[in-house]
Length: 253
Image (tube, rainbow, N blue to C red; front, side, top):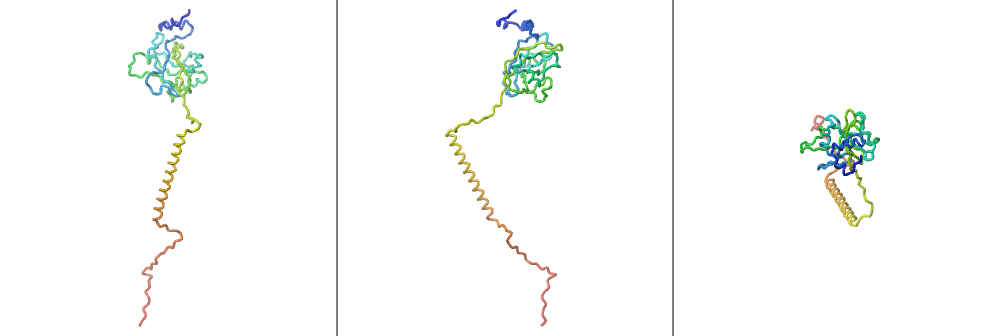
């Protein structure tokens, strides 16, 4: 049974779930595509992280219980076709598997955290790659992303019996890249040459002034102080104690 694009757009969410099963996908398809946060946040995209909107009210299907873990799948854009949902929690790929597998699971939650109708003063976002304290070999670690991407993400609902449902893949997300400053070679303009010449003259005047001031200060200080050299004679006054002094003898008349 085929569906046109227009017919697919008119399907209700329960019918869409049934259609996904009939198409042989194997998992219930949740009609939702993860998106970057549109809140006025600083650093929505960085060199190692990006911020998503929370999927509020997207997991209210009856087949999903409050105890079923909801994972975020992070994958390289060219690896989404190779993604295979793990059948057991023990088989959950970790961030260290990204270079080899091309994807991993992180940010484990449950649908109670994604309920709709929560207070509007709460900031409902998910920052991917925001945990620098966990090991990339730890299950569920939200480790910083290792490169600029591009990345695509989706939500996967698991249970004790295996995967239950999944959302659509997001569009590509590219992280910021550090740009090294490189001086542009080439001839300098006339204005640049004039500025360099003026600065050079001012620097020379400043150095000359400092040297003159230093010489003048040293001359005044050193010229007013008598410094005894090693060749100068040292005079000492002789002193005779009274008990060793003998007066001259008085001649008799």
